[in-house]
Image 1: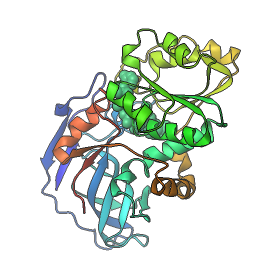
Image 2 (image 1 turned 90 degrees about the vertical axis):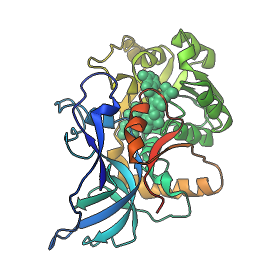
Image 3 (image 1 turned 45 degrees about the vertical axis):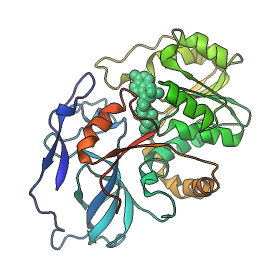
Length: 340
Ligand code: NDP
């Protein structure tokens, strides 16, 4: 059973491939006798997600996620096939998505976040992103947190990624004016030509983010879907409209910093009566059936599209994960281990 192990905790800075190791485990995986609620999985696709960076840090009280265990396989979202089960809800051959290990096979006892896949007439890999955690994040963040209305001005950072590309498409379906930023020409083209954003820009080529936002939003921003934090958040705060909303989804520009960057323009929240609300997707999984009901027909009718960046094999997983923090991924980053 090949596995990706976290070798050591990474406090500050970009993680390196050498912080992880691909190794062969000789432990035979089989269901423990007499244990109910155990399942043996064959992992098919693994999801690379920015929050995993926080799990690579040594436990601190301020973090909302537990640290990974050094010397053990990395844990994350994935898509898998059930090979054996003593769990009443899962049987051999079932396809599932949810929390699994970065390894070829995983033994899971009492799974608490594993969803049975019901719709198999869409690409299975979508359950690492569009139909999985990232999709639910976009859905909950946009519809539940942003309180969006038709015609509003919406801005999304890290807009071409797993979450951002969907938020933009949801906002367009509702009839909003949508602008996204991303870190390369290729990504900006995708935003405009593939995802239907009204406009998009490369934030790396903008020496003055405030001026850039004023160019795209001369009347200000109603909704900011926050994925990056830092300087971008500061510039956005200068451009919010009265009663604007900021959904604080993530702040990836800060995840490798030992000390978080200061935000200077918070007073604008008061003056503009802005509501800024953080959220975690984990609080919204009860909406998953409703989400599928909306999204599956949209996929089939071509109203929603999804771009994936697919790395091949467990050996490529460490670099794929690190690539999230340099913007190497174009679309949802996942790793394929096996197609069936
Ligand atoms: P993406 O697919 O968007 O990948 C990450 C992207 O972030 C990179 O491709 C890069 O794009 C951008 N990025 C990396 N470093 C920086 C930086 N220093 N400054 C600005 N941009 C940077 O990831 P996801 O869509 O999966 O996640 C997006 C955000 O949503 C993250 O902040 C994540 O933590 C958060 N999240 C929150 C959840 C919740 O429950 N609240 C659940 C899931 C995700 P580019 O080339 O454009 O710079």
